[in-house]
Image 1 (cartoon, rainbow, N blue to C red):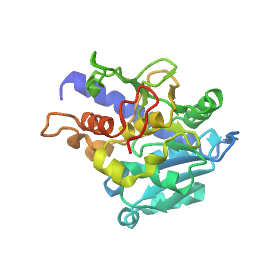
Image 2 (image 1 turned 30 degrees about the vertical axis):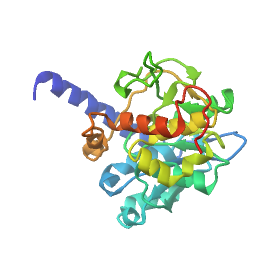
Image 3 (image 1 turned 90 degrees about the horizontal axis):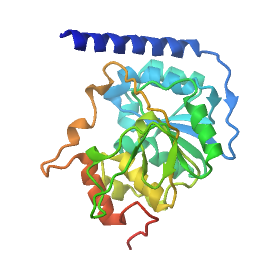
Image 4 (image 1 turned 45 degrees about the vertical axis):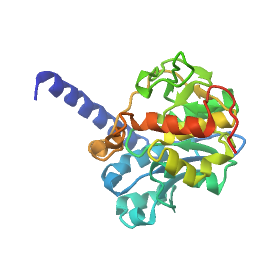
Length: 287
């Protein structure tokens, strides 16, 4: 291993250990009520190959400075049958485990929307560290910007001179300032808060997202936000993503390049533009 790579690996391992220590220090830490005008849930999904690194993420989410009404882990029946004992034991800390159809990454929000859209739903990924005040910042953002979707991390959608959306790789990535707008695109990895009924009613149409963008849930949720006339408010500050060891062995990255020369996100953007129009302004659904 060359010195530069060794040093990066060393720093990453130190960050991971610091995060694990932080999680342990949160045990029995008091949590404030969220104070929102509707129930608040944290919703995520996982699958069996990710189970070895799932425990610390769930502990992060259960040990926040603000207490949600529920933390729900959505699993397919096949994956639930393989759930490790230490994950099941987190029910003692308040974890809810629920079964749903295997809609891949969409499981983190679609069954929660189907269950009750009149809640604040915060989505999280299953493979990263979340700070102690992660949820508190999203909740405060929701109070200060009512009706907006709130994100810890966002990109800015870029457009071509023709008016079409530029390739995803050309978007302005990981914005470091607070801003809202129709072109602010929330990225799910760092957590996103969806207020009650902020997503269009088409959001739960499983046949649509499975055919148009089966591996691009962030793209789908952005379109459904805009289709409903809502905007994203980004909290600002470049988000640092700390992934757990081994969690990225299994990912969707291998699916992001197709024989048509487009990345997975670009194929999804093209398909959703055909189906629903461009997201820059309030859109009209096609019959």
